[in-house]
Length: 634
Figure (cartoon, helix red, strand yellow):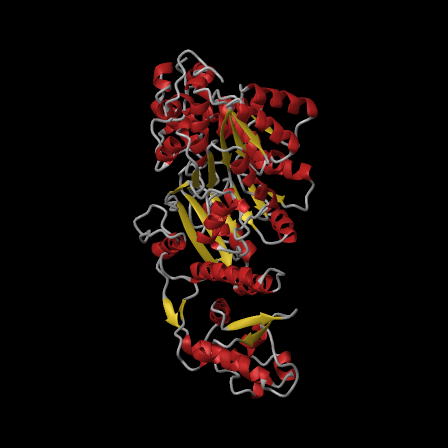
């Protein structure tokens, strides 16, 4: 056993550790309760939103149990970049931590294994596939026999569930932790899990006796916004240029090709953008990720291969150019914005093709019927969120079983609460569209099914070559919808597909009626739709969107006066130098919030500097004199 304390004055009290090591005065939300439970040796399943402080829920107990002589805590983590940054942050705070992954050579692995088996290491990060190797299990056996295995933390625990949005087969072997190391507390953590996924986590990790902690899923600093697709690239450019110029953001696309093309196009428009997907070499992905984490104002264009475990706190927006598969994925991805608690935006462009593509992917999947049924239900919930004309935050929270209130009073209210959309009764229009699809199938001349574009042309009475070719100008439905715009008709069709009354079939996305369309045709279903928003005006000279707002702040709070702003910029420049020297992202040295508070208060002594949130004892000792010098007080 290790001695009860590792230093003369070290304490195992969790709150004292929080203040001493991390520089925070108090726990947030459920953190204190979770930490107390795990410190006492209990198992826990923790559902806490991204940015809610999940890491502290196992890092503080790991430090406390190590100081009490319990040895090393093992953290299961799926990503090399996340391990590197979390270990770097812990070492910066004076906590001995390390990781084992494929980026290390054999000598480095041996050195870390020696630190682990000696019990000197406080936290060890390892990928799930390494944790279950015979070599690693033998080392854990030895630690367990000597009472030097303090706890297991299973991060991104939703990866164990086949119902979840990011299943990883390597996580399935983690049941061995319960079977092999009885009595060692386990804490599983995730930001997103619906009831099915939660039950799967409990069953597969054998956490039936664990205490479940569910924090609020509300992220009041995030504004949710969904726009109808017109020209999505230009819509994205307008959003970035007008609202988030020079700020860090993530843009998600469904395909690798679209990622590369979008990144190249944005670069051509003057945006610092980088592509990221699994088709790139590992060295390219690592280079781009490092730039995103370490530089200011980089926009990452990515598939969902990017993002899990990204701790960058100052991501000011997450945009989706394609519809995600479900609300869990959407919530997880949008949650990467505004981890620092400052205002951020979740923006999504959404159109008829998104609905068609997602439904087809489910229908053509080789998965079992039960899995497909569940995935359709998840997609339906996301479609309802996208099509809603009431509070998006309420709908989002309701999906996770949490009662919410309309976000109009929030600083960052969703688009529907900020500008309540007008609606129109599209019931009769829906009946006309369904009737036209029906008549396609019973028209004797040519094919019996057609796509959305041709359907809209017929409804609006457009005498196109294709209409004439198939004789559709003779249909009774030809021109019955001339009073509606193409955009309005696309909204009607999108809703009909979203509700399952119409399906898209085959290589050419032709439309067909389902059994439920009968009730709509008979007038038994009401369809209430949003009135399409107006397209923003464009400059006649360049075709570019004319900006209507000022530039957003780039990290510093707006309430800093000129002198404080100058101090903030000086501190940020100093932080960048330190981060480069230590090969770490700047936010690991100090957060923007900590720098802003230093700039605002301008402490003149080490004692005053130590009172600022985020300044722990080790950082005060290591950087205090330099910070005072930068502030002009040293």
